[in-house]
Image (tube, rainbow, N blue to C red; front, top):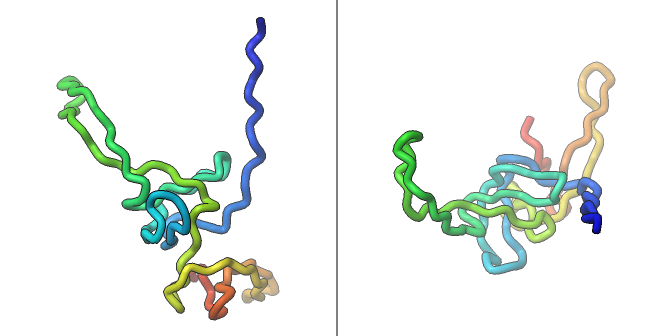
Length: 123
């Protein structure tokens, strides 16, 4: 009997970038805020600092200088369960996109807060 291969889902468009501050809106860590450590667009998940902490049991390995024991680390959380925190109004907000004209006649897409209109991208 042949084993069916699992079809990968389409990559998700995520408006969250590394180093953004996000707030968890649902799940066991609801209400927590943290900095985004990484974004995986293939699986649609983000890794947030001090959110979804899990215990990892590690066996000691003297050859690789691994001490062993129980270590706590972050686990990935679904991107739909977090919202971006606006640096201007300090609230969890939805993201809008505006097009800015940059010197040289080039256009640049900028993420904007829907509540206060502040730009979320750093220059």
